[in-house]
Amino acid sequence: MQLRYDDVEVSVPATSANLGPGFDCLGLALELRDLVRVRATTGTTEVRVTGEGAGTVPTGEDHLVVRALRIGLEFAGAPQVGVQLTCRNAIPHGRGLGSSAAAVVAGLMAARALVDNDDALSLSSVLHLATEMEGHPDNAAPAIFGGVRVAWMQDGAAHCLPLPAMPNLRATVVVPASELSTSRARHLLPESVPYEDAVHNVARVAMFTQALLHPELLLTATEDRLHQPYRSEVLGESMAVLETLRSRGLPAVISGAGPTVLVFGEIDQVTTAALRAQRWRVWGLDIATHGANARPTTLHGHA
Image (tube, rainbow, N blue to C red; front, side):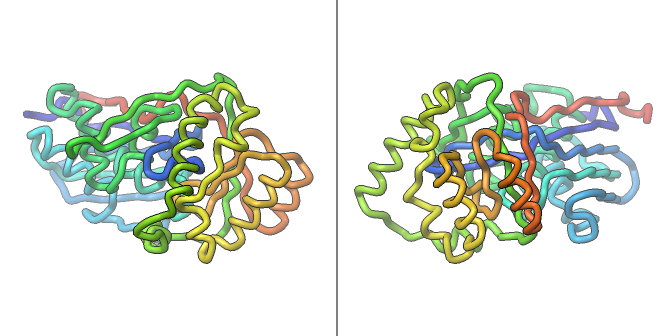
């Protein structure tokens, strides 16, 4: 398998996982995108990063996009090459908005575009490889396919399906200045939960699948007892914001492992101004109906 192209561009949306009750299985894509350009070369790997993560992420072979690209090329049976990688990052790092999933998907989709052979690296294979790297498919699925997705594992393989949603559905993300590692947040989760809490979340997830079409149900449908309460010790300010917003009737959830808070719908101007005065970033975003987009810019050998 040879490379058909040697210069490709990829855009990947931010994602929010869990969405309240759907721990490790629900996720959505947001119109906040990282832009990545990959050039295949005969030289050594070079990485340039602007925007989020600049100056803190690796700039060589250990960069996450490069690692994913290598895995994608290997899976497709394509040759490994030198890489000139340029990243323009808009997705905040360590905030629960899927920055690592975006990097992984960007690398895999870049490999797919370089090879340009669906039989060698299909979208289902991209989901499989991304899930292997991420550990679970809840962020990877919407990053690849867009929209709101339910994802699950079956016989060691990742699968996903779209959930119908109102076409004008929007979300607001409330992003704190501090980061939180997913591994630290996951470490706080118990090995078992009370039976009634499990039943509660199962009912809310089932309800959530309809609430996207009936927003008046979203406040109840986004209740959670499986993960958010257990992470409160590291999500103090975020949980306080979440509880304040929910007390005002807004369907707010912790985005992924946090600490970002995601709200379905808009936040009033007074609340927005108060949050921004406390150094929170507040962005209103469309749900991204399309996931990662990769396009070649040159034929191989014609850079």
